Length: 40
Image (cartoon, rainbow, N blue to C red; front, side):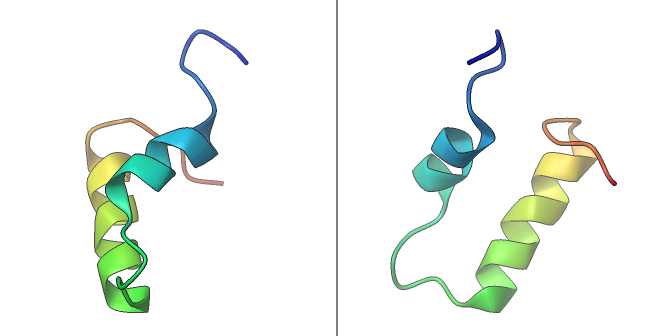
């Protein structure tokens, strides 16, 4: 793992088991907005 940690670990802390695709997409959009993940 790099200094930023594993992205799966970060997402795992934000996403809950009962979250649907819309909630997950909203979380990813927020992470992109604040520079936590990069667009491909």
